[in-house]
Image (tube, rainbow, N blue to C red):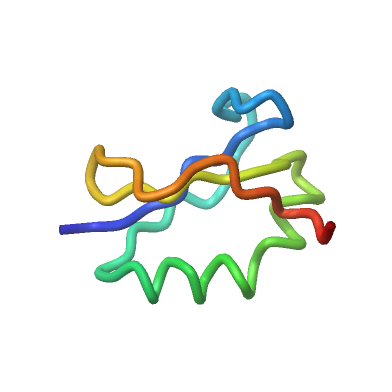
Length: 68
């Protein structure tokens, strides 16, 4: 199984119109650690929220990258 992030705008639509990292991870923990280290860069690139996918199954979605 592999894990990956889906990058979304504020409306929850996938951001596909710009070059963004397309990393895949062997575990959920690895994916979450990577996001913790890279979320600021994603915000600067126009990503507002993310969804975590295991293969095609959504583990969770709509997670804002902004501190609230």
